[in-house]
Image (cartoon, rainbow, N blue to C red):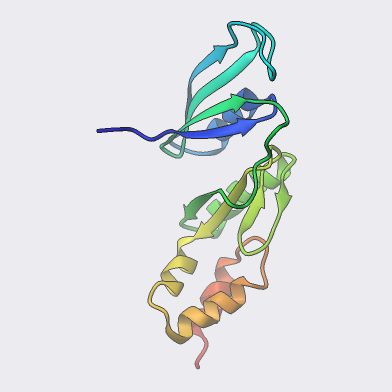
Length: 159
């Protein structure tokens, strides 16, 4: 069976990012750090070239590739949460560590990678479709960080 590893392009701080993810999310760890064996366009000999790590059980390799490519919203990590406290913890860790808020449960870490911090109450409300899904969706569209109580209240409203 072939394994899949996500390759994430960083300017020069893949190791810092990997260590932050490990401190922030469960089932995460740094597996190995590899140094450049020689000079190349993005790193000098002996500097960190790649970092193999796991975040939320997903195998990743961080590549210090220099400034040529930047992450964008076309790729994001989606993190399902079970409570407002868990939602707040992840959101605040990312945004509070040099990240940036976006809309509808999305935020960006300081390295430019997007994260969707998504309470299960929202995905559960939207899955069956219909009026409840529409109300949950409309409530979500007004939010930055998802407010679990507001989603629950929107779902509970009479049509």
